[in-house]
Amino acid sequence: MRVVVGLSGGVDSSVAAHLLMEAGHEVIGMYMRNWSDDRFTLNNECPWVEDANDAMAVAEHLGIPFQTIDLSDAYKTRIVDYMFSEYAAGRTPNPDVLCNREIKFDLFLQAALSLGAEAVATGHYCQKGWDAEKQQFQLLAGADKNKDQSYFLCQISQAQLSKALFPIGHLQKPEVRAIADAIGLPTAKKKDSQGLCFVGKISLPDFLQQQLTVKRGDVIEIDSDWVGYDSDRSHYTTEAQPFHYLPSDGKVIGQHDGAHFFTVGQRKGLQIGGKSEPLFVIATNTETNTIYTGMGEKHRGLNRKALFVSQEEMHWIREDWKMQTGESKEFLVRIRYRQPLQKATAHQHENGVYFEFEHPQKGITPGQFIAFHSNEEVIGSGVISG
Image 1 (cartoon, rainbow, N blue to C red):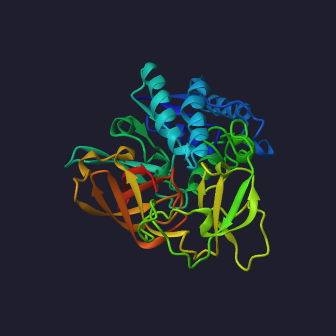
Image 2 (image 1 turned 30 degrees about the vertical axis):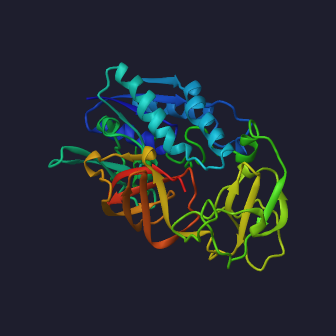
Image 3 (image 1 turned 90 degrees about the horizontal axis):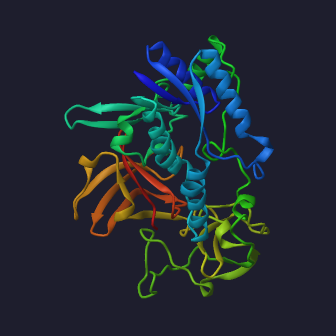
């Protein structure tokens, strides 16, 4: 089978290409150039030229064809512009999840198919299964629980999954390193990349200031015993719903440079001292340019019992698992990468799904993704509305 491997210039995709060759596949290496502006890259990490050269060196070492595809225009439109719009609206996006849905398993997949490939492969630590009874492909967690990257693929579809291969998903990271070293891959000792998908580790504030202006506003502290209200202030609310704060609910304790630069659960960057416990961001309001904070990890505004995903933001990898209005199902869920799976019950309403946790969760952040599992299988995901 002809397979195009997304060679990123790292050890994981390098070993993925090698394993596919060992399995007898015809392998083509392709590097995705998604970004070339290194003005905001920290410590010169993951510059695209170095990564592209490393990917080419791997292809040469393995003796496979290699080419570079420039997807930077689409990446800017689909990922970067989306990031700016989400931060401007006071939400916190996850560009790596979007990169997999919009770039790797859409545009990159289309490019691979145009070369006559039957599948694309990546160096993700996840696995692919098949439910013979339901005739559905399965997205499964990687064997290395410390590196499991299934969360980043929680938005892909059955059609995309059907064309995807994850050659290293059954391995532990040290095993991948050992294989790379044994066959002399030039990326064997290269450290793992961090930061945005195929961009690198960036200074997010500097990056966001390209389009989001600095605007001074108030930092307001909400007491831990504050009684919450719903959006129209007519009823008390509970940890099952997001609190809606007004400046009069607390006291001004400082200033910030723009509410859109902060996210729920954030601790660093407030630059406010003199507190007996750390301050956390518990809410932002970009319309009034206000940040609300609470002191200590147990502040009730930081910990909530449930979250909501609107119906249009729900995504099912397994369409056969979709719920009907009034139906409830138990799942294992996570709301951020590497978070241990949490028990939750999903309640389907007409306008969306409420996920009710067994234990309150810290830092539920609008704009992020909740991925829901059945044991090791990712069933679907949704963008957190509130």
